[in-house]
Length: 256
Length: 269
Image (cartoon, rainbow over all chains, first blue to last red; front, side, top):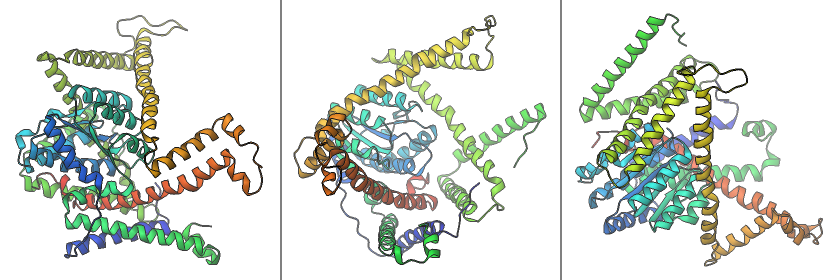
């Protein structure tokens, strides 16, 4: 197996970034008040839930081609917060999945969220459906589900590939309000074109902090922003002073 | 790390023993009080999340390295337990449709037919290709191989390709909406799209072929303008998004590892 090469910057960088994020969490824990900028896409979630309730139709949450990874876990966490809102209005959330581990996890998270939202009886375990682990079989299953249930709101959060536009365009045809967020940079343009609101880039990992306003989560988002500033400064400095840096430093930075 | 057991009965006993112990553990966890579940989840997530970084960041082969394959196998075994749940979920949902004769119950019948036929043919073709049929002559394809080919290559793959081909139509409708020039951003998008699209077809390069190929004027040739747009505008933007994403992923991983993202610590509320 491969191991970290401590003679280069990269392993150090990961720990420095982790320490910075940890510092943000610690500062928030210690009581520092932190602010997070407005994210219109996330503000629209409540509007979407309200609209589905008014129309008396269910909502659809697709966690993408979920695997056991951080983006999928983040998607399930977001679904939990949407379920809490849905519980307030006794609205159903349909959640088709491609991965049985994520299905089990989502079932537990949604069940708890409905209970926390004050409507445990509104949770139906059959609304979390394993369709297929094949990309296009899953896509056709979701399209069928959207059409049969006439969903009023679609949430697409997670890893997506070519099926993203098939899903989003079907939702658009049905007139559903659509909110999407994905770490797959190739799919972001498709979601921007077909959805009402799209969460871009790092905003994807800030959604839960934004929704809950929990100080510790806000602290991690603050820490991430400090990391980005530090990385941008590092890139800028190494670009400008590239010619002046001695060979060992260039080697350490991986520039030689 | 562990050598496979060669003795058949001992191997079988170990497999069934492991399944039994796993089921007992899962049942015990399931029946335990919420507070215990929460503490257990926090501890297991922390220890499991600690293994890989520590193993990777200790230089060279270290005391944790020999356990790597076993830990990865453990993840697969845990995932395998949930696979059965996926099948149960499908059967329950479609079974209910069939039993209650709902409007869409023919689709559920199609599911059962597809599921049973595919499973049956797949297993027979793989494990007992002589089942109920004569052995294929040299140069002939056996019955079960043929059935497998028909179902998977003749039906499943074309069906998948059909769904994929829908993408072409959806791209047109999405592009139409995206390219309606209502704002400055939409106008810029439209202009760049036209340049990049034209640069990728012969007529596009022909249109600006009269512009000198050398000197600063060369950047007005469509093929050069497209290269400039994709390498100097598009690529850095994509990289910037990816930078933000990966730092965000570190933050999210840290939150999950330390169980600060309370959504996953079942029974916490």
